[in-house]
Length: 173
Image (cartoon, rainbow, N blue to C red; front, side):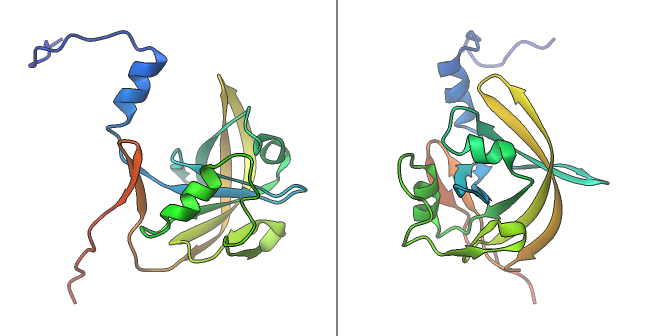
């Protein structure tokens, strides 16, 4: 094993240190929704592709959250990749104790009754295939059945405890 090149010594991987380290990772911001009653939705930065053959994605949800009972029973969910200018929507779905689907949130019932948010950079309708409880969270594995993409745009990112985006990319013509 090669020793670290800096003078910093490793520290114990407790909750505070792990959270501090993870702040260095930039994550795509998503909102996951599920049909109710009650409707459920939450902001997640844990969305990931698991497999392309067969297509499977994952996200994590806190089993102590108000969204968990609906997510635990949902057969289908919507995963919305937010656009760089959707900071407020991300904050709304990250706030507990409010009706996240009330105005100004714009949404409509989609396939399988899943709430579909307006103006997302992209969304996936997914069939839940498994839930694996690990510590305080559940990893939800789901198979995408329908996809919708705006085709252009930049994603909303979460980095160092705040929302941010990427500069507009020049696409050669």
